[in-house]
Amino acid sequence: MKIALWPPPNEYFFYVDNVPPRERKEIEGHAEAIEIAERKKKIPKILRVLEMIRGHPCADDIEDVEAFIVRTRRNNYVACVRIPVSGIPRYSILYSHPNASDLSDHLVGVPNLIDMARFHKCDVYSYDYCGYGISSGYASESNMKADIRAVYDVIFFTCAKRNPDQIVLIGYSIGCFASVDLACSITRPPAGLILQSPPASVLRVLLWERACFKKPFERQSCCADRFCTYDKIAGVRVPILVIHGEDDRTVPLVHGKAVCQKAAAPLWLRASHDNVENCRETWLRIRKFIK
Image (cartoon, helix red, strand yellow):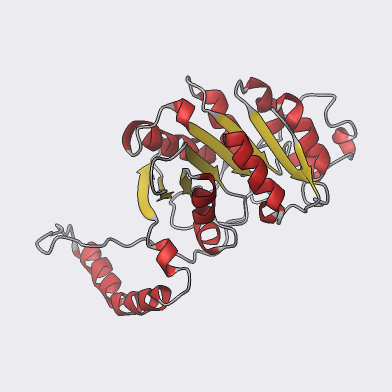
């Protein structure tokens, strides 16, 4: 699975603000006492880091981000964020990120999830797959399916209490698989599905027009293949928007063309794999699709 999932070094943490002063924690055993003592030694360093963060130009934006943890059906704990928008949101967006980034990249990058919430006037939710950031467990296809489902259930049942037809799924690169799998597995379909630079599958990316993939779309996926968006997309019964860069050399355009066979309206851009989100046309087309 290391071929497809590349968790970056963890560069963020969640912290609890305004903890009640009398809140107590029961300590069970000497080992836990040592662990808590070691944690307390790190508090001065964390406070210095927080002061540095508050001085960063993006600090005001990040303060609006709400962080929370969800437990998946596979008993893993997944780090999540919610970026609320002022006023009544049009929709709630559930964003699944690429395979080599984590939440920190999508909160301080340009553009970022905060820009997405403001531009589209939607609440934006995102999460880190198991093995990414501070999420527990290990990165795998099975865990990824459970991760996105747990976050979706929070949006649907707990946090926003949004109906499925008020939720838009957005996937970028390998995040497309998570979004497509969720769209296929839930009883009530979401409002729409947006796929940015979708790989058809892992082996189709690695072995394009080689060996058993000389004619990659004339046969079913190999039994050893993983993250097979191409096989699952036929089961999606909602409007689909596919966006793919014409200059993409990581996941060639032919992948997006194959996946978009049942898409609402494909969009091909002069962009590569990593900068498709930086294109003005991407943002305008997504806004039009959401409307």
